[in-house]
Length: 97
Image (cartoon, rainbow, N blue to C red):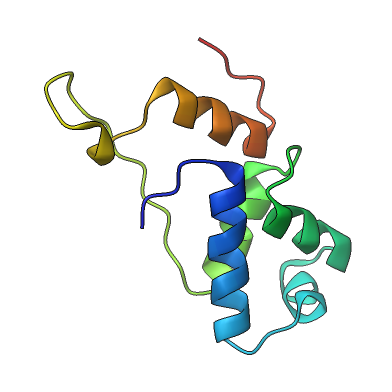
């Protein structure tokens, strides 16, 4: 699945968590945070660190792929500036053009 913004990432996390039968509190305990942080991720809020996103993804048995694309490839196979900005909002890295 192609994730284009923090809200879509949150939806993927929520779907995987509920499919596994895990509560937000259980997932939070598994990755070492409090339940409200999992809620923030699932709501697509900014300020969530990349490290935590990776821990959650791994805990849910998911993988996260980052792909580059050449200027001749279709947008759906890579990351656009808007997608990078959305990822930046999730990661809170300060990365800008």
